[in-house]
Length: 511
Image 1 (cartoon, rainbow, N blue to C red):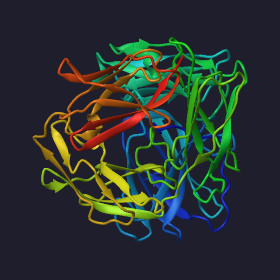
Image 2 (tube, rainbow, N blue to C red; image 1 turned 180 degrees about the vertical axis):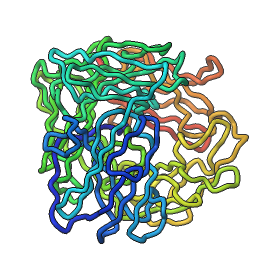
Image 3 (cartoon, rainbow, N blue to C red; image 1 turned 180 degrees about the horizontal axis):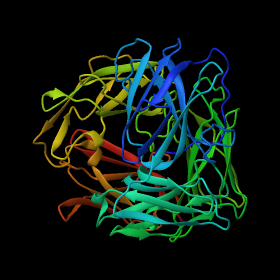
């Protein structure tokens, strides 16, 4: 899931690094917007046609960047890329930024040859008749925690995006205004700690904190201790040359705990200047971790990566308590591109999101930016990349042709067509509706929709031996597989063939 938050280090920039001037938001050095409003970022490059920009939380509200202000979002600003609305390599940059979605006092800072170039951005909560408010219950109230309304895209991989959010005040209180379209809907909530002010705590599983929106609702949330036994997850983030990545980077860890009533926890941390990280946890049966730098894609959807999302190492089994778990992480710097075009119903399709990944490398995404054209940053070390239009850019009743393509780094003319009249579920990403629960202790149910010519579900152990083959059944017009055989504790992999497509993933059996 791959969508989280980064830390508290005030970055010092060397002279002659990246320069910008005349930086403005909505034509001003101090802008005020609503959480659901887009905004315009403009500036002029000083020389090099790229820069690094960072959104900080103005923790004390003094409209100045202080060493104690945590950074929330990092951005890559490149002249002429898909975000640059003027679409020419002329030293001018204009970006129409997506709505920030969460409220707070923010500062946007760009590297500027050692001279601060900062714009103040105040984001107000939505004013409406629908909201959610309350308190985050910690032994001691903490500020700077980010309370989020989220949309769960993939429950199996805990893949979610933030819809709206708000930072807690000094007493742990929060308020989130919501559009009227939320009336009568259940929402999921999670508490995140982008500033790492409560390092010994992690959030509940989002499904636990569900609320029915009927007006001005209240909800007390809780973060729970994860260090009762001093278990620690630690390691170093390195690049493809095995050198530590010194850019401060967020590390995300999931810990799956023993017992049927324990939830899935999310824990965030940051690397230091040597690429090292150390995350406090508690006794767990399975731990997965990965790293993100550059941008926080849950908050700022426009993304241009300095590093590819890395592979996902894991530690599993009966971990001793306390356990010192070493997970070395690797990321890859994009040094090649894939280019092409997307049309929808015969017209150029701008602001269309595309996704790509490569076996063992990770994934990335980009957007079409001019007459349906796109440029996807990739890593040249992978011989082939899988690329397609992301599910969020394929409306109901439409389908992408092809669903995805397989090309090498440097490929050009990789085009996609979005057409109407598609069969239900024609989008590949809608294949797996649910795989629940995972990890599991006894039974696990796969529920699928929109697939034809579905074969048997194959389950393999880590040695590659087939340990179970399950035939599909039909329920409520969906296809289901129910795994109830007595598998021993451990990690397994599934494989499913549907027509000419193969779906694969990982399962975890707990005691």
